[in-house]
Amino acid sequence: MKILSSLGLLSAACIFMSINSYAQEPIWDGNKVELVTKKLNDGVFAYYQKNSESLEQQGIPLATSGGFIVGDKGVVMIDTMLNKRLHMQARAFIKQTTDKPIIYAVNTSFHGDHAYGNMYLPTSTLVIQHQHTKDYIDQHFEADTQFMIDNFGKNRGIEEIVADTGDILVAKDSKLTLDLGDRNVDIIDFGFAQTGGDLFVWDPSAKVLWTGNPIITVKPSLPWLLDGHLIETLATLKRIYAFLPIDAQIVPGHGSVMQRKDILWHIQYLEAVKTQVQQAIDDGLTLEQTVEKVKMPEYSGYVLFNWVHPSLNIPAAYRDLTKK
Ligand SMILES: [Zn+2]
Image 1: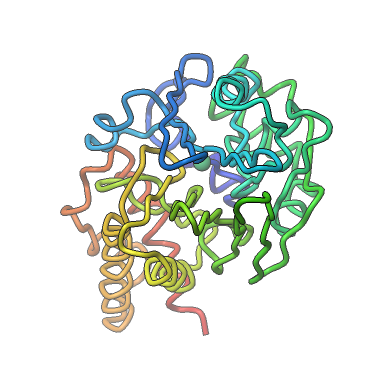
Image 2: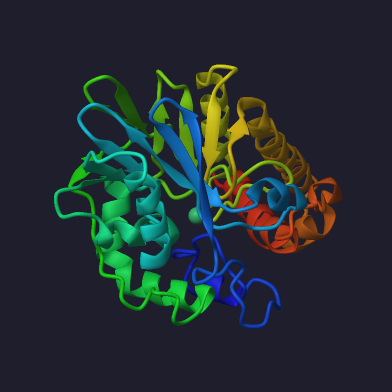
């Protein structure tokens, strides 16, 4: 928590032992996590932490999820992972599926657990990022990697990471369509979702969406308003929900494959935060009084609740709703 505020929420990826008193252990260990892969449709695969299906139900934070799409022309890889070890596990899944080259790799945000693996890609792979993501990395890479080492631990392969930013940049509020020959893949900015550089990957023929961190995983996980923007984040999640067909499969930022209806949990939580914090503001409460009042224990099943709700989301909501 102190680290987060001292860095001005600079980069806060998806980790953080320092948020509570978890001694010096990271919430998940980049040296130990084992990934598994799951086929979602022809040529469409997710990868995520082994046993995610049971762990996520218990609200336990999990390692980064990603995936890949195999088209006639080659492969699109979605999120390149925290370190070489996890990157190469993901690469092995691709290799055992196809001999085709990885022509594109997409980062759903600048967070290191989604983008540090870029440097291990083949040199011919084109990295796709949001413009905001490239700008962030260009300006903050050194502080960002130090922050990640502080939170994920030393000797987790972060010390050797070299910045590798986008070859193709997606502008704010825009969409990029990749032509893989037999299929198209859309890279979409649905609006502010967590960092302002949030890209979603949508395969319209397979009806699969990758979300990155804006959707951590199923209930009881909760959104992290790391950079504020409660109102915009809520609107973006509603836009995504409305966009998706009812039978879409969703690969979240940190868990196994979800369904469209699972997104409602996150929307309902943010709606409740908005309503209750607004009421507190209308009643003239200070931020401290609001944190004390808006406890929402019905959402406390998430292991990180005691940090993410009172220390991050309620203050973010209070600031957003008192902005003139
Ligand atoms: Zn993440």
